[in-house]
Image 1 (tube, rainbow, N blue to C red):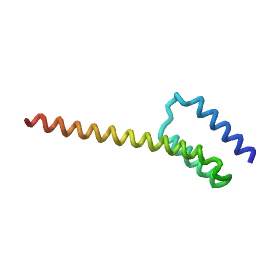
Image 2: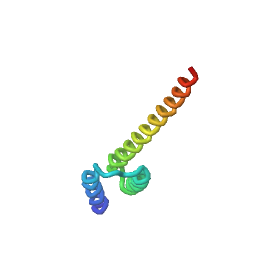
Image 3: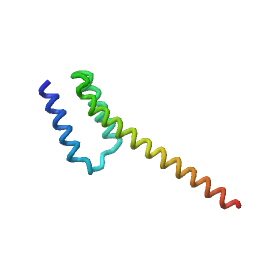
Length: 84
């Protein structure tokens, strides 16, 4: 258990150090898979890390979806205006 506790501490400090560095969605997906395995093996005390990673991924996906929707809407609006 000490090993996992140490890993969790390292992960928390690492998170603070890389807050301004770009992290890809794929890296978050991989971290989520690792966090899920840690939770299954060692319990739900590691849930906050999983929840934070999942939340970040959902925020990013929602942002991309909303931007894409806006761009599609603007594209169709421009098309409608050229026919006036």
